[in-house]
Length: 449
Image (cartoon, rainbow, N blue to C red; front, side, top):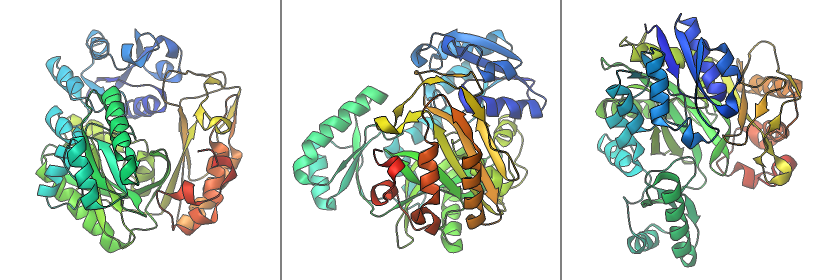
């Protein structure tokens, strides 16, 4: 195993990775911007290196600075976490050029899967079903394709993710303006204004399959996660298993994912995302070539430490098991963001004045916050993730509500009340919901979402 690893991230995921490294007896080196000086991840690491000013472009996204931090501290590998440089092929190449092992897939696979059109082309060749749509198209071709597919349709950035460069178009007369706006947003966010078109599947659920792949061809699928409760294409609450996926559908999805992972020569951890239609049909939408924010729900139902397995795979070791991971019980994850519901859930930086995490059997709380911690305005608003497990979905819901009620978090506005209302709602309890949950369910705490 490595002796020293650079953690190229911040916040709760940096804390999560550092703890996994320490459990393996590996030294952890943290990086931080001046806005994060003294943050929890810098204090629990064995060493910490400042890599720039608060702006992410000048610190956490600065490849040269991150690589220099790894080199000057004698690191052998880099774990990117999620976000920032985690899906940047140029960063992977830079790691390779400087004899640093990147904990994740290789640059070629990452580049191909990061191109949403190329990813769909390769997955189709592997026999995975796709949403009806197009490859990259100009405005004229896109307009004709939309008429052929029938409205509503989605315009999506070819190099995109996280809801950026995406527009729902419900009428032909709105198409040209939507195309121009989506292309401009994609260009600003990714440096690539290319768009493709997909037929809108309504109602649909967002279901994803977690996979681990080693360098010897071993593939382990770890079941599905239900991620349909979203606001502006950002996930809010995830659970595993999905209340909408039966055993036959699960097995078919995992068979498709295993076959696709082998076909594209995937390595390390990845997540294949699908839309699930009411009739049980499903369609591939993208591959996230990294660890996911919601990975803990899979860990709780399978007992597999995904970060530890990532590190073992990067060290050249084989998976402990292949095929299908055994699953037990039900897990739910709630993302807790520093956001103000009164201002349309705008980010709400500030100082944590009071913090007491929930405790008890089956409760996990992943965070980097503590009393007196500063939530800076420069980064994502995610502060913590509450993850609960119990033997079945109904008891897991009750445990989640109890834990949310026990949580004390003051000083900044948060999404706690919205999460409480969602999890307690009849729509959520029934398990019969879709990606339109927030639009279809009357909830006072999320009315302006």
